[in-house]
Each structure stands twice: as structure tokens, then as C-alpha cells.
Image 1 (cartoon, rainbow, N blue to C red):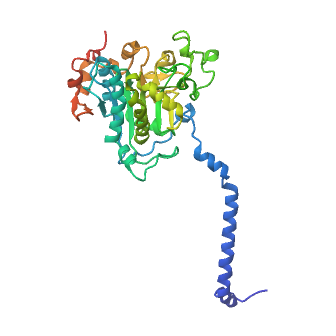
Image 2: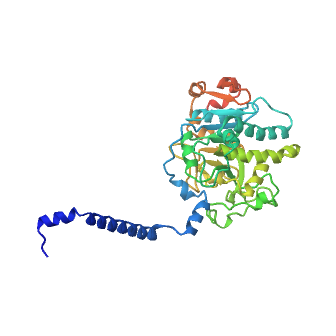
Image 3: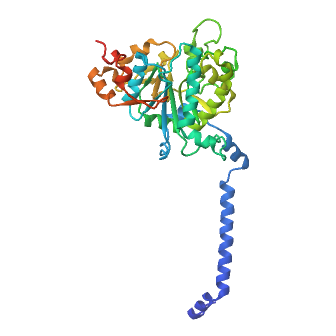
Amino acid sequence: MFIPRASRLRSLRSPLYWIALLVGGTVLLCYSQIITSFHTAPTPAIVENALVKIPSLSPASLLSPPRPQQQQPSQKVHFLIAITKPSPKFCRTLSTILLHEGYEPVLLNYGRHSELKHVNKVRKLQGTYEYLLRNTTASRLLDSPEYTPPSKNSHPADDDIVIMIDGLDVWIQAALPSLLAKFRAQPYRIVFGADKKCWPNPPRSPECTNVPQSTLPADIFGKKTDTGHLEGKVNVNFQYNRPRWVNSGTIIGYATDLAILYRDVMAYVTPRAKQLKSDQFVVAQFFTRGIYNITLDYTGTMFQTMAFSHADVEFTKPLKVVRNKLTGETPSFVHFNGWKPPFETWWNKTWWGRKSRAEWLEILRTKTVRVDVDGRELGWDEICSGENDFLAPRK
């Protein structure tokens, strides 16, 4: 039926018209939301699994790491080196640290050397724990009445990041931002280097037998994969093992989590101090418990552990740094545990090993290193003036 224009306008101005329009729109909106949620909302079981499942540190997940999170203004990075006195090996390690961008090393227990080996080992653990409580966000978080241990899926936005290395056998071959990007690209809160041999724990101990399997392919060395026996003849086929055991010579993690770990380690070590074999012996026990959200760098993405792994790596061209041939990863740190000669003999294969003495000193003498026990800032010559013959490349 045709309605004159004036009549149509009067009907639009009717209150009943607007009420009907509002009710109809509300019904359509609710229906749309119901249909959308029906198609997109996960089931409760999926949500629960998503909260508790932690993905592995696999080659695929780290090969192309996502863009790193912007560092929070209050978040600090601490780089700790456990060393009691200078030596040529330590100065070699220190030179590679000072050569690369971003690292501000702190020496733990420097000047506190003891002739009793167990004392030095306990001091390494104790010095680490005390530093975390004094100098990082761990102190504020642990002392907060509202503080609870972090969940596996989140961490305080401003929690400091702490890096720790052995002082006598590590090369640094990448700048700090590169290492941090790799760490932030994976989900775990603490990462240790990974070894091919369980040491120094007894072969049949849980620390050797009850550990997660490596994320590397089960046939990465063909039929010989994982044929290195924990017992029997020394060093038989360990080179064919996939790395899966803790190495405490290279560590990175959030300060709060590390403080919780080292608090519990110290509680265990204190009454057993004279029997302490090494910090690795104890840390392996806590890794086995599976409650600290720790993983190992099975792929050599951040830390390449070299014991029984010399055949697994090569020097890249033209960068002349160590690369893992099996995983394609170029590690930030190379840890020459085990057989030591390559720590020195491979030096001249690197891009920095060909620098002249004058070039080295021009860089090193502009940097300082902080001593934790007294806060002193020491220059290169104060630490390594008599320990730096390696700076002149061999003819």
C-alpha cells in the first residue's frame, strides 16, 4: 500500500518505531556474538592445556626467533664471571667479552682464592646467591609480601636477566643484544649449556638417567646416535651422544628464578660443604627435579658446549666464528669444557685472533671490569698486564 511521504515521516517520528528498532538491533547483536563464540571459543580442555604446556627448546623454534620484546626501562642485565685470580686463560676469556657490544662484566669472588678446593666451590655458589639478593630485582621480589613464585607462562616485566659463565674457558662471539634476543625467543626462565656426558654425578644416579631427552633428531649421528655409554671405558663414543646433561659453565635466566634455585642449592650445600665435588654436581640434582622451569640449550643456539663436540662445529666464512654444523646455529658463547687445547689453538681462526697487539690494547684499555666484593672498577692493565701474550698473533 502506498503511503504518502508526509505520513511516512510521521511514522518515523513515532516512539513505537524507535523502540522496535532498538529491540530488533539488540536481538541481532546477541545472536551474532553467540554464533561467533560458537565457532571460535576453545573448549575448556584446550584452555587448560594451553596454560600448562611448555614447548621444547627446539631448532625450529629458535632458527627464526620472533622480534625480541622491548627491554623495560627498569630491567637490567648482569654478567657474572666466577674467578678468584687472573690467569692467561681468564684474560683470553675477558678479552672476548670486552671486544663485543653491551657486556658489563662483574667478577665474583675476585681476590678471594683459597688453597682448599671445596672452599672455592662453595664460595662460587654462595657468591652467586648473595649477588642476586643484593644487586638484582630478586631481592625486591622475594621480600615482597605479595610475592609468589612466577608461573611457567609469565614473568615480572621488570625482572632482571642474569648471565653467568666459567672464567677460564669461554669465548664470547656475539654482542649482548643478539644473546638476549635468543633468550627471549624461548619460553623457559633458566637455560644452561648442554653436555654430551653426565659428569661428575655417578652414572646410575637420577642426574644421569632421569633427564629429558635431547630435542635433536634421534638419528642425527646415524646408527651410532646415543651409543656413548655412561659406564665402562673412558670417553667411548661420547661424541655420538646427543647433548642432554647439565653444564653449569654457561647460564642465562631471570634473576628471581635463579635466586630461588640458588637459595635451595645453598640450603643443600651448606651442611655438605666439605664433600662438594662441583657446583655442576649439585645443580644437576635440582634440574632433575623438574620444578624450576629450566631447560638446556640442546641446539647450541646460545651456548655451544665443546666437550666431545669438536667434530660438530666449523668456522663460518667470512665471519670466522664457530657454527654448529648439525643445527645450523651460531652460538653466542663457546664453552671449551673438557679437552682444552682448542681454546688456544683455534684462537687464530677467529676474526679477532688476527688483530695486532696494538689494535687489541686500543680496545681493551678503554673498558673496565667491576669487582663484586668491594665495588672497585679495574682496567685491563690492572688485571691482565702480565697475562696477555696471546694478544700477539702467532707467526
